[in-house]
Structures are given as C-alpha cells and as structure tokens.
Amino acid sequence: MGITLQQVFRQHFDAVAAKRRLSSDMYRAAWAVRHCRTRELGGHVNSCPVGHVCQVAYNSCMHRSCPQCAWLPREQWLAGWKRRLLPTPHHHIVFTVPHSLNELWRYNKVQFSKLLFDAAFETLHELLADPKYLGAVPGILAALHTWNQKLDVHVHLHVLVTAGGLGPRKQWVKSQRKCLLPRKVLMIKFRGKFRAFLRERVAKRLLRLPPQLSSAGFQGLLQSVGSLPWNVKIHEAYLRGESVAIYLARYIKGGPMGRARLLEIRDGKVEFRYRLSALEGGDGKRQGIAQLPVESFIRRWLEHVPPRRMQTVRGTGLYCGNQHSQLTTARESLGLRPLEPLPQQRMTWQERCVASGYTAASRCKQCGATLVSHSPFPAGRGPPRSAFRRRFPGQVA
Image (cartoon, rainbow, N blue to C red; front, side):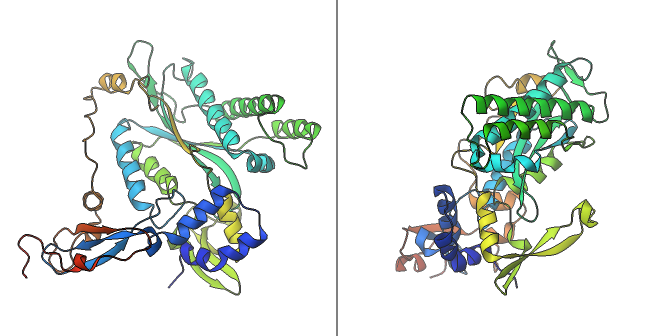
C-alpha cells in the first residue's frame, strides 16, 4: 500500500529531534508536514448541491516542502508561467556545483544559493550579449535543487533559456546555434564567476566557513575545484518551453520526496524508489529501490528545507519580474498580442481542478455537480453540526 511522509514524521520525528540539533526552519517544516490536512489546522465541508455527498476537508499546511498539499500551488505556478513563456524554442541548461563545496552550502544556504543564481545569470547574459553567440537579451527562468534521488546533497540549478532574444533594435534575434553556447566556454566562465563570488564574500566575512575549514583551507579548496571541469549540461532546444517548465514545476513545491516514491518502513528503514543514475546503468527511466535508516531519511529530508523567504525560483532578462523585462516588446517583435491582464479573482480550487483535467476531485461522484465549500471551522475544532443539515437551492429536503 505504501506510506506517506506524514506517517514517517508523525511516528519518528520526535526521536530524531531529541538527538539532533535542528533549525527553526526544519522544525516549522516538520510541524507542517505532521499536521497537514488534520484537525489541528481546521477545515471546511465540501457538499454536493443536490445532497449526494457531504464530506469534511481539513486545511492544507501550504508549506512549500510538503508533498501532500503541493498540487494546487504547483498548478497555479505552472499556469502563470505557461502564460508568460514565449512560444519559441527554449534550451534546458543545468549548472552543478562540485560536491566538495557541499559543506560551505550547509553553513550558508541563503548566500550560497544567491551566488549560484548570480553566477549563472551573469554568465548567460554576458555570453549571449556577444554577437558571436546571439547579441540579444534572452528570457531566463531558473530553479534551485539541492538534492539527488537518494536525498544526498547535490546543489544544482535548472535553467530555461530562450533560443533567441530581443536585439538592440528591438527585433527578435533567433539563435543560429544548435546548443546555444559552447559548453566548455559556458563552464569555464561560470566556474570562474562562482569562485570569484565565493572568494569575495569570504574576504568580506559575508560567508561563514565550516568549523573544520580554515581560511587557508578555503583558498586551497577553491584552487582545487578551479582545476577541475564542472558539470554543466546544455540540452538541445525544445520547441516550446512548456515541457521544461512542467519538469521544473515538479520540484517547485512539495520537496524532494513525493508520495509515489515511498514504499514502506521495514526493520527501522524507509524504503523508496529512485531513478538509477548513468553510473548505475540507468537511462533516466529505470528505477531501483533504496533503503535509509529512518533517522537518516528524516535528517536528509530536513536538510533540503529552504530557509524562510529564500528564493528558489528566479527569472531574469525577458522573464524578470519587474517593469524592465521588455517581455511586451519581445512579444510584439514575434508578432504576438500583449499579455491580457490577469483576472481580478483567482481560480477556486474547483475551477483549478477542472482546468487541469482532475474533475473527479471537485465533482460529486453520483451526479457530477461541482462540490460547494462551506462551513469553515477553526483549528482544533470539528465541523459544526449545521454543516451537515445545510440545504442548497434546488436540493430535495
């Protein structure tokens, strides 16, 4: 039957917290996962307007790392970006940080992640501004991931880049290269920028060195990673950016472990599916089964909880979130109409289910009528009795 992340945390988190020193962000995430869609968060009642169904629905925690309530925020994010993405080919680029820098990330998650975004963005903008490669301003959307399939630390950036951009004369410039940029040139420039950013922040004491790493050791570490090739991948262009956006959306909300991958707890270990890497003979589709002691599983999962208010998704260039994006001008150069203003009222969860093709979740199984949400009740309380006696227009008494 499988287990849920909520079950793992409800049964074993207290034991882990008693042994491990955890941050306030980790405690907050654990509390949210344990109480998501339970009486502790309050709720409402969903009823069929004809009277066939009347069910209690507890509120979601809405924590971005909770897999149980990630679907709706994920669909809302994806709908917004599907609207904004230009209907042109897009490249998917992955910037990966060497694992020898993982300890530095652990002690400086916010600053380290910001520098990673800045290094990738500056690298792409500077290279693509060169007429030799493109000579235009592209649209760039990036999402930070810090894990691999086994929950190990694997800090990398997934970047969506338009295969073209807005030129100096406000015309659309189409990329003439199959892979947008030479991989080695991109890797060397990104590696140099990121190392320079790290060195500068440490010199200004804006980054905290791990206890086991001295200043001399840090300089030696930067020198050693500077002589190695970094893992930077450039995939061939997709006809539209939506496919990559859908891929990114899976990790925007819900954390690193979805319910479908969890199998069971056996002999004090959590068993889950993972995608086999190339070193394990994988092809991106084949799956294996991994086991982790419960304590290790919870500790690893918590390690990937982003600190509060830390941005894990950012746009720049034509996709930046301010008035300087020039997205309207880019649309005009492609012969497209300006984006229509967003509706004043956001979609209800019922409307979002219908728009995404999940109509069964928002409709009565007997008559197909859209369920009506009513009778909200506060945290720690149950639904009022009147909620189950409520009548709607046209409902038979």
